[in-house]
Amino acid sequence: MKTLFATIAIVLTCSLYSQTMTITETDAQIKKADSIVNHGKVMLSEFFVMRDTAKHTTSVNDFAAAKVIYDNVMANGTVAANDWGTTAASLADSKLMVVNSYISLYGVSFRDRMMAETEKERSKKVKYNGVEYKVSERTKTHFELLNPKK
Image 1 (tube, rainbow, N blue to C red):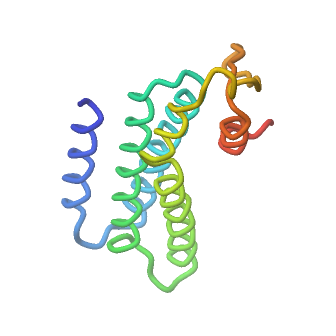
Image 2: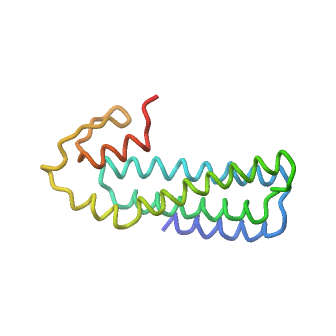
């Protein structure tokens, strides 16, 4: 419910910016969307290891909210045909593609497949925030793609 209100607030905020944004406003919106995506990735990682569907819902809502912001930046941000505008457009477009891939890859069908995994399938181990969790091979692959070792 909290995430739904946050999403509504973001949509309303974006509609306030329906006219062309300045460079500063465009940059601030990109950073805001980046922060939302990062939170969504954390929630998705926690869903992978804890199998808490509320965390999955939060992550999907975060990705959808970020998509709204990136779409708004592409439509109304300062993406003029100058060096900064071209860079901002490329950056926002690439981030939009990543968010769209998260939305399509980690949707409801992914959640349902993960929740249907049996204890026998969860034989691989991953470490998250210092705690070791048992996951399936497929989940481990997705977890490692989302959380590359540094």
